[in-house]
Amino acid sequence: MSKVSPTTGAELKEKPTGQPGEKKPTASLLQRKGVGTLLLQLRAFIALFLIVIIFAFLSPNFLTPGNIVISINHASIYAILAIGMAFTILTGGIDLSVGSIVGLAGMLAGYLIYQGLALPMFGVIVYFNVWVIVIGTLIVGILIGLLSGWVITRFNVVPFIATLGMLYIARGFALLISNGATYPNLAGDPALENTGFPFLGSGQILGIPTPIWLMAVTGIFAAFVATRTPFGRRVYAVGGNQRAAELAGIRVNRIKLIVYAISGFCAALAGLIIASQLQAAQPNAGNTYELTAIAAVVLGGTSLFGGRGSIGGSIIGAFVISVLGDGMVLIGVSEFWQMVVKGIVIILAVVIDQVQVRIQRRAAQAKA
Image: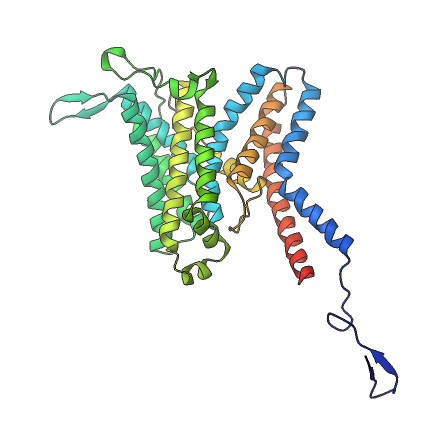
């Protein structure tokens, strides 16, 4: 079918689809965009593979069984932190307090093991079983997370500011517990029935270090919750479009409270593992770990704006950062240069995330 131009009288053929002058993207272009998006989504796996290959070439000891177990053991702490951080970021929030909670958790456990709980009114000092201490410390981590979530939801405070304040509060209490001192020798005393704490960070089950088991159990359970439960779907919904989630009947504030509680739990667990491995509690433990957790989550494909990402990707991102650090130590890279490299990784993680968002947006527009 054709039309006659009102000015020239010439016949004009109509375009079958699209707006006048619009160029329809070719199939090959869409395919290239699809491949690019896929590579970005798998960036954590690709980065981990390349890092392993490079350090295996630079150091013959890198891929020895002993070093592999040590690397996974180190990565387990970052992975547990990343799991908790992933939930908060999936809702469009962030938790800057996790590093301080790590330090506070270790100090609480150290205080109760090393000094016990003094009850002046009865003139006694109570020493608790180690597992009571562990459970109590995890509950404290949950409560700190709930407090952050409550400030965010009740007073509509930006998560960055609320958790930044909690960072200082938790670190301050960690320092106040011992006036800045370290609690050494947390092996406990058999006479006080408070031994067994080192098992949490240095023990083995079926020949595999306990932290690896804790990471595996936490990761599997978190992935199941995120992908197979109504709560997990609501987490993604809140991060994708909070207003739409509210209109759909989702209790957004409750979801936020829970995800910050999860983050606090994971941070406290990481703090207990670190103190157990060292058999000492240091108030500055976990310093800047919040940045490492954020980098691991974003590197693993989770959007800083929420609504997109996975627990598995966050764990792989944690492995990338941990293996990178271990590899640099193995080949003798200066600690100062390690900080520079990790800073570059954090920036690249955010840049790549923005590139992925743009590519996906353009692909969606092209299909439309």
